[in-house]
View: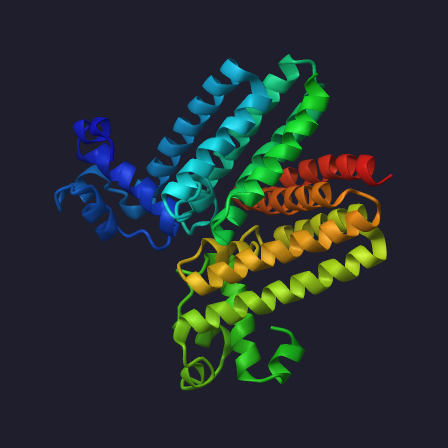
Length: 191
Length: 191
């Protein structure tokens, strides 16, 4: 948990802890008790802040994580374009995986495969939003709209899938292979 | 459960049930009790057949599922080549997703993200094996070995990632977009 999250109070701390635990264990294995312990929030606060129970906590955690990823993705694309962004994402993920023992994955994938229907739907919307960010950037560089969207799906699908493979193999090799292919493909389309 | 699985006795039935439940709920939320109920196996049989407990059951389920996928992948590639296989996989997955309400995903992804370290490692090995099947076929069609392997990672990563996106969105659209891109890319490399 960052100093900012701690300063924002127990609600933000619980959301941040839910995200961290979902990334490591998935939604099903992330309990209220785990989130309380991880965040250090007072016992009563969880039902006070999340009267809708675990479904609400997980849904808000998914939304918070997705919004953060979408903002970062948008900022990076404005800075270095789609090809540079794909490389930057993989470089960041590689560092995180190696530093964290390959345990933590994508919180949106966790929500998308989890048992909470509303969090699952939020994950679906988040994937769509990530694809749109890529697609809009490619379209702005002259790629026809439908092609830009299918490339957006390929980029997000390939990165998310390669992340799962990297976690299972405890090796960044799948991410390195995929980013190389995506760079060649995207480079051929936008240049 | 198929008639063949039932005929093969309680051990195969429990493995088949573990695979089915992992695909829907992930590993953490698949309990021994759930597997007994789903398979109809007698109560005592689970510790008789799986003395190593849930870790052993999940590991064997992952290995069984992975071996089946690898055999199917190999047979399909021999029949219709890599491009035809990618299309066939997506057509099959689309039918399964629509028929099953988008609930069941890939058992190897479930194992790769799950809490059982040996099943996770099996999943990692399985992803590697799937990549090798694709890479060998591409290499046989003249693609240089290293490129064939990175394309293999792209194909498996993109298909697995798009499957997660399709489950979350309750729509086959991400799979359809990704298969279109993969067809163009693979077609340009092997033809």
